Image 1 (cartoon, one colour):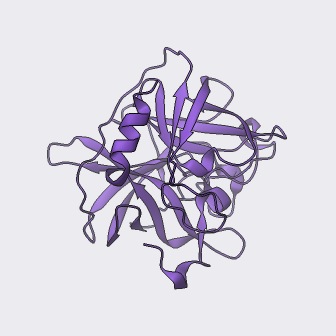
Image 2 (cartoon, one colour):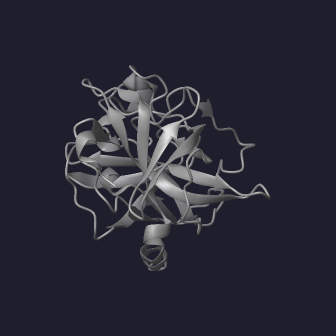
Length: 261
């Protein structure tokens, strides 16, 4: 559902937020990625604390980036394709509430959705990748894929990410945070538009982060992963709308790919 008059205002989270390359300052890596603006830190008591991982791509110059991923199994992670495309040399994931050098597990291979095209500053359908991990013994929690295809206007969800927590401070990246978000009612099998609740919204580093739907019994399911956000003239993430790739439109590919471990 790409709307032409929005094309210039929208920037992929990997240019304004997701796999933004970091220099070498914050938490041992560096600039400009982020965490949920004004989001609340996730704690060990949260149901999804062990369901989400940090995704750390390293380019061929040795510069680290930051994204977010959701576990499909203890050794399989779903994230945004743009987090692992381009001149990426290695990828690892971090099993911790903060991205750092500890608790890292190597990604042994990854598969990008075949419909994805890596075009800068544009919404690219199929923005999904499946990562396969080396053996590890970190605790995990597996959430099911959401089978609901409806995203009604005003319906509320929870999203998580390691992205920027302060709009103008790229060094605020690296802590797993959560916030509520709502559907706008504009949705297709390829893209769902979301709008912020209160004053929290996604930014750099939140690419690939899960959007959860909570059912009446209190159980969470993965509705999609964050892909794009409105960006201002200097790369600030704006308090407007963001876009996720819904899992229901790609469920067969996700499940078939994940089973190839």
